[in-house]
Image (cartoon, rainbow, N blue to C red; front, side, top):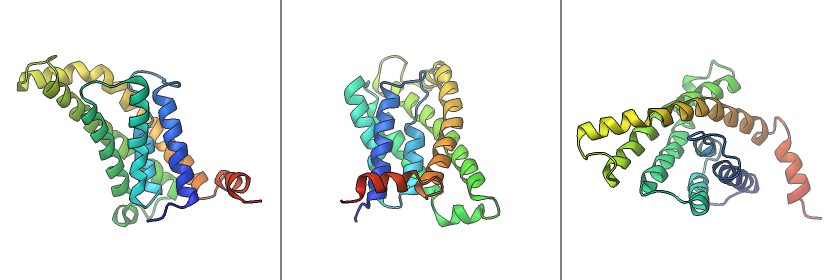
Length: 194
C-alpha cells in the first residue's frame, strides 16, 4: 500500500495542526480538532494508513502534555472517529446524499459525524473514568454521576465539533481535491524536483 505525496502531505498537516491545537493553540477545555482531523482524514484518504492521523496526534500531544489513566479510552475513542470517517466515505452513504450539492453534503455528513462521535466520546471516556479511577463508585449510580459531572465538558466539545468538523471537511474538500489550488501550489513549490 503506497502513500502518495498528496496523502502524505495531508496526513502531515493534520498531525501537525492536531498537535498544535492540543498544546499551543488550545482554544478551550474539550474544544479539539482531533475529531475533525480523524474523520476527515479517513474520508479523504482511502487507504488505511490515514489511521496515523488520530494516533499520531494523540501520541505526540500526550507525550508533550501528559494524559491520565484513561488514555486507552481517549485514544480508542478517536480510533472510532477514524472508523466513522471510513463509514462516511462508503459509497452507500454517499449515494444517499447524491441529490444534494457535494459541499452541502459534506457539511451535513460531517456535522452528523462530529455530533455522533462527540456523544460517543462523552459516554465512552466517562465510562473509562469510572472503570479506571476512584472518583466515582463502580456502580450504575457512579456511572450516572460521572455522566452528570461530565456535562460541563460535553457542551463545549459538542459546540466545537459542530463547527470545527464541517469546517475542516469543507476546507479539505476545496483544497485536497484542487478547488482552491493550495495543494497544487505546495506540490509545485515543495515536491517538484529541480
